[in-house]
Amino acid sequence: HGELGTTLASALTDKAKARPTASDLALEFVSQRNRAKGSPPTQADQFTEGAQIGSRYDLRRKLGEGGLATSWLAYDQERHLDVVLKQLHSDDFADAARLEFGWANKIRVARCARVWDIQTSHSPKYLVLEYIEGEALRERIRRAPLTVDSARFLAASALDILQELHSADFTHG
Image (cartoon, rainbow, N blue to C red):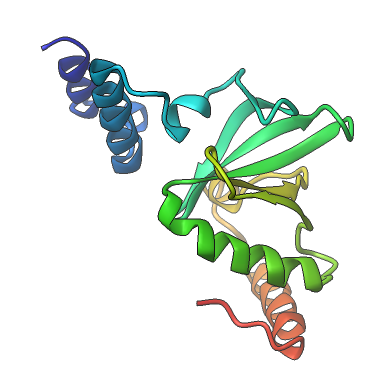
């Protein structure tokens, strides 16, 4: 079954960490279909490690993904620094991204990444955010359980940030 069979087989591996996510599989199937039809590359095709986006951003590695977007560590050739590109999963998310950019551009919260740019007028669609060096909470917890004091500190920090956002009349969702 060629490419399709290889992709499906990767989802069935007995090594849980090696299995692709459902969104990875969906993006790969769309990419395979478009290649078979001779269609132009999709956003998923354009966002790969080592690719250049917008003649400016060099993708270094995938940081993670959520329901709206996949986050990539990228190097901004104009600013000469690392940034995060949030690759929108669908053109349907452009309105939500513009709303997020509008709010984030107005609010300055010390412990939240700044949003610097947005590109939704043509594909690929993405947001550009400040990159803050550090370990993801998920990775920290995998490494070792949090102590009660560490968990309290993280919870208090998150609540402080939410308080700052809410006092600026910003609510998520």
